[in-house]
Image (cartoon, rainbow, N blue to C red):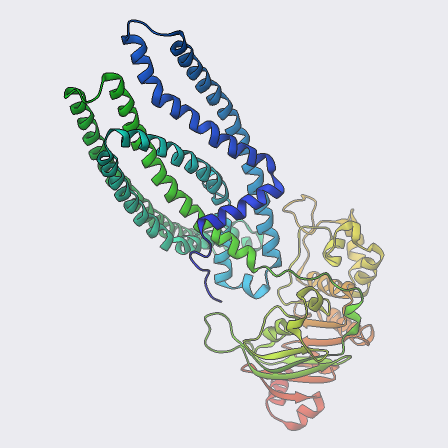
Length: 594
């Protein structure tokens, strides 16, 4: 998987992207932004000209009523603009918070829509963390920062143009020198921003590791081993090590910004002192009057302030735009699947792997290599072999969780890549070796649908077939009992065998034409295991079954046994045929039975 590009979209493209969403989802925010631009220019303009007018008013013997009225009007206008701007800014942040939450929702939905292979990989996790970082920084989040900084930047540029015009009327050379120093200021800030950009992925990686370790600390599933084997100190050491690395990288970035700020402060000091000395000289030499001195002094101060602000805003807006790239890159990668066609899952005929090879990201040795296998409707196939032979990888390739790097997978004779993922998944009911449960009710964990869409009678029938109905009926809430104590104090915790039975009930409820079973009996006691094989033999006659097991004796109910070794089909045939060949399978079978 290739890493995300550092700068896929320009600042203007990212702002346009957000504005289109604001126009569609939050129009009042547009009103706030444009009002703030207008109101934000009023006060600086009034403050530029008002001191000159006040000095003239105080020093001239006679003052016209018009001038008095104009001064009063400007003061009133500035006060009204400030009051309205304050309330508008408050509303602005409320709307921005709502917009940011909408993007968090999109990110969450997008993560659910990403292919499993991407989300499972280390780079996929880092990409998600980078995308999430753009939205969880409050006012520093990229969406909020782009809009707020963009609005302030427009105000700064407009006021900068006004103040520059005033300075140019005095001496264009002064303005040119001040502008050159401002360009140097921007170059210093850019270097700091570039350094931060280079370290974004490192920070996201460390945040991901911190999150993983924190999840382990808070997860009861790890609690037993942590306490029984006194692992707390070890885990704390690991967590502290990751945190130290994160703090080190973050400190390096902050130090660069601090050094840049110090250098910029020195430039600003030199620039302002030079400008003030020049204006004082102009007054001493009678080139400008005292009222004009106040005007040009205000222009210099404003020029300095707005130049610094603009440089900071340009720096910030580019930083926010780069973060926005991370979010957009993650959102753009989510596939737009079509809706599942009713009845499509009833038309399964065959699935075939032709010369399929697959390896994990960064792994040189393929887990599956040049694998050829065809499974027809109604086949009962057992996939066996030693650990690391590629059995679980084969299951994930069949159902579409993994995509082969080489070769092709055909479903009903057509390339599986032509199917939307939800259509392809509909062909399969899967029981994974590491099957998971959700903090929902038992019924919802069987149906994997909301309660309102769950057929409770069908749930009970599936639970009865796997032998869980009597045990569950003992609970006060029955199938409505929650499978977690994390969100419900009355929630229940199942044993390993009960969990596997529930996973089988889940597969039966979906009723897909192909069942993919990865070690479904590893936690079952002998009587329960026997009932499982009886269930697979009797109730699933019309189903296609791919059964993975380390226990070769459990594979005898299947019509065909496929032995994988180093990601390839080493042997294939019925149990009797493979025993007669007296090769790898026969040796492993005798070893286990002895």
